[in-house]
Image (cartoon, rainbow, N blue to C red; front, side, top):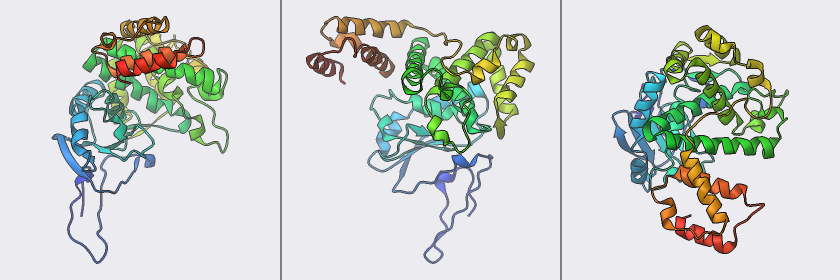
Length: 356
């Protein structure tokens, strides 16, 4: 039987001997790496007319509650990127063995059950996968050397969704955590001169692109898109450009020269200020760190300093905190761990008081 992009409800028209044949037509062209099939005992719950969560019966209701904001994420993403062209946006909660946070398979994002935290604190992963509906799925990087064109723009859109839904403070916390991850990747994992810290790394003949995989294309790519936005004049000017970029290149590929040419045509004066070769090819840290509200970061860092100075943790310290604030606090304590480690007793008190 024929099925539309709503392939999560394939029609059943009876067995033919020992086999049942299904035919699925995906009306939107996609890259082959985005094709995925899953089989299991699954139930679904509708979140909105175009969003549904699928999972094993034991977790489907918890998943439906956790991801109840999916339609709202999708609407905000459409406001940023333009029309959602895929029909449905469903989520499939996989078993714990799924090795990623999420995978943006068109129409049916795969997610890990570890996102079901019980407080909707990790649903920014869904915002990220939704953003891939434009960056990556609709407009795809031409080669794996320019993978950052998928992930850098996706992180940019993800954080725009966070900014609009949860405010500048939460946005800043997400940016700070991303920058901290980038520091670790560049300084500790690769080294500042390693080619894999370049936005567009040179993959030697026969190299496995997975060897170059890290947060660099995500966070350095995000920093570059923020740089382009700032030079263009901010969100008011860059927003229409972003929509046009996705619309004009829809159903096809992109690469760094194509981005450069389109940006130059739209913002010639700004483009003249961009050191394109340095951004694309130079290893190490981005030439410019993204600007963001630092108030939440400063509060978390101040608490870390008090704890390192011997203060006893109090429940009031973190009252009303989001998961992003806790992550920044733990990052700050980790950075200081080698020079000033907390004792086992302090760690036990921290865990008991803050719920770690």
